[in-house]
Length: 395
Ligand code: NAD
Ligand code: MG
Image 1 (cartoon, rainbow, N blue to C red):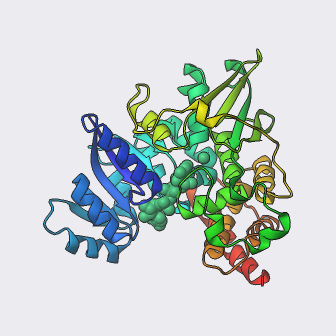
Image 2 (cartoon, rainbow, N blue to C red; image 1 turned 45 degrees about the horizontal axis):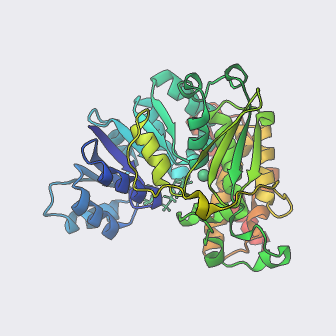
């Protein structure tokens, strides 16, 4: 029986994780649920899953939750430092890291440092902390498993030795020449370029294949999501720039591929449903049911592929360039993008302004070296200040 903590329990990945746990109650126990402010959702989850601990990062939300579930034997906690304590408790075996954005970095790193089994959905945490994150995995002996569907697909196509050396694997030594990162191209793959400035938040979050939280849905529409995943792949698979290639695959049936030196290409396929990679990580190296329908090849019919168009997806290009420059640039880009996307969702800036804000910050922010988590957080804060300034230039 694995005792699990679910960071971001009220979100899209959190919901899918709880659904996989419900399919396999004999193997997994919900030890703690963590969210920020969604009190009524959290109260309903507590009634259904009866965790030992429910944690709301926001103190007011925790007080409200306490009142709503006073009849349940659930310990309610709150705050950021209590969250780091929670993930490191001795009873905890596995942590699902599914808080969205930079807010997930500290608790995810705390779980890594405590040597837990960490199922990583929160790509922003790895984009920001990169080398320090991978070093912490090596030092603590934590087991790191990638939940992001592309990285999970790549992981499944690796040799066992490479799987056991995540972050430090030797791709050429494993006979691997390239990692092929697939992406659907999102809702605007074929839209008229002239229509992009007037795209609404509702149109941007309507992904053709995946159902996800609002931030990652906008990132998928700009393809910043693929850019963040490019950086994520760089760290997880110790890949050089010439070992990473983005391939547009609109059907989202192949979730990514690994090309070997002998000409073989291994791919992982399945319906676009996050319960598959989540179940894979939860049970690894075993397999369990996830509740996902088997793939019907006759319904799929055709698989197609094309190269990304950087004029349509400038955010993808920015991320690939930042990845070449280094962790300072990707940390700046991630922070700027979080601000830009939040303001696009609020209706403050246009869809095409997201790339402009990101580019402005990459040019303006002085990128000091990152040798500690404090350095990373300071650069993240600086980039956010710059992004807020850039917002005013968009009008
Ligand atoms: P979501 O918006 O649906 O949920 C976010 C969760 O994070 C919520 O439970 C929310 O309470 C919590 N949260 C937000 N801010 C917080 C804070 N400051 N402190 C603590 N908790 C906070 O997001 P999602 O789509 O589930 O995505 C979560 C993460 O997983 C993201 O990093 C995303 O990139 C990654 N991911 C998601 C998918 C997907 O299909 N949804 C796929 C791959 C990777
Ligand atoms: Mg993904």
